[in-house]
Length: 141
Image 1 (cartoon, rainbow, N blue to C red):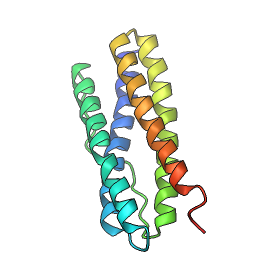
Image 2: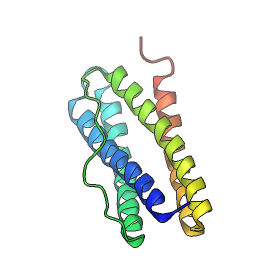
Image 3: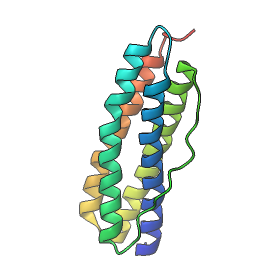
């Protein structure tokens, strides 16, 4: 594993963390209906974790002598609460997969501090995914 490949992967992760911040912020603002209050709180609660992940990634990319990404991945837009949750679930599922891959790359590269940090992020993102699954389960006809 070479540094350039690792940095490129970390930049992909960073663009998806930007996406998550924008998605959660937008969904919190536009969600409506009988579950608005609950979903707004849920979406808002996720923003600090995603922002922290983005800052960590930008700092790590810079430490590896790379240039942090500045563009988010595409943000799926919807006003339907169930679709919002499905979009969140899909994004979190893909994020966990990417971070597991990045963890392997970091280990191959020999950056064991990054391996440890990515394990923490994998845990956070897995928790986000599981919470979304619980909200979706049985409440959306």
